[in-house]
Image (cartoon, one colour):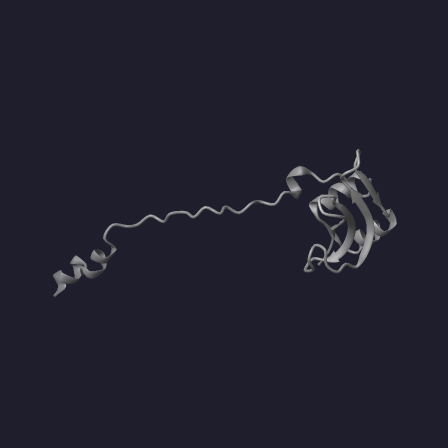
Length: 120
């Protein structure tokens, strides 16, 4: 699957990002297919520059934007504003549930049913 996502560039504690098209299996700062824009969160207001033609091309080819990339594409007017409920993934609970223990499971297994005693 092809994703549109952010690739971090810039110095330590001074992040800047490129908006890239990459295979979903590659690392965040690994290989990519194409650069379609860049984003600088440190400027006031934040700088977002996206090549609209390239972005629309990759979206038409089936590339899926990540949540942050979708927010930036919507801010640039390339896609519609994503609804808050749709983009959030349900979080899996990490709590372990306790299973109820039945009382004396061995006793019920070792005892023979009353019906079998009556027949013999």
